[in-house]
Length: 250
Image 1: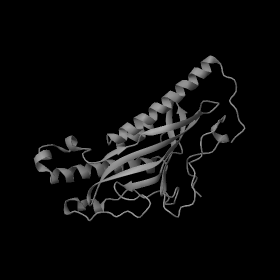
Image 2: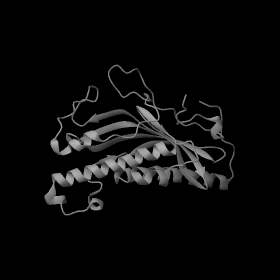
Image 3: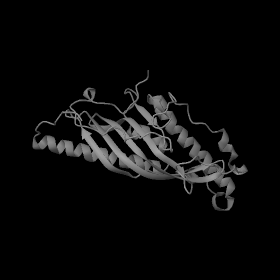
Image 4: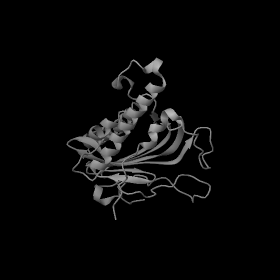
């Protein structure tokens, strides 16, 4: 642990820091709710630091680095959601046949990320912050085999910057120890059900390529060595003096 300790703050400074923590908690709550509502196309503009900053979105098996790459991932999620909605409309014409694309958008996928156990550190200069959350979540994703429910255990690890008086995401790691099909052992290889003809159009869908495909965090398996949590935020004065949840390209 770092030996840095926060200085003595005035009452006004303490209130400012409390407000920063509240805003960061609300930011991540809004982020999670946008995901539940399948509004991924709004996430980058609403919550991220923007194109002039070194933004980075990290998953277990790779990362997107830079504004264009991060935005392209979210837009691909929207594209896939729209395709799933149309396939479900074709599959259930009596229930959905009379609805247009906007009315059916979001039918099918459902992603819940309840963030708990927050550890949030505001920098001494109030220009940046770090947060770590534990998440026991679940999601339903329509695959070539049809709807497939998963449950997850993992972490959100986030760097924030204070941009023009508002907190924004700079780096975000969403990494899971468990991502398992419901009803199957999460310690063994997953068995995907057989494809269904009405959902085979999903076989051609591809997410944008990662900036780099690399194992960031291996998911649990019986041979995985002990793997602790992502590094917990520690008190610090300015971002240049602390660690980063972003990925530095080699």
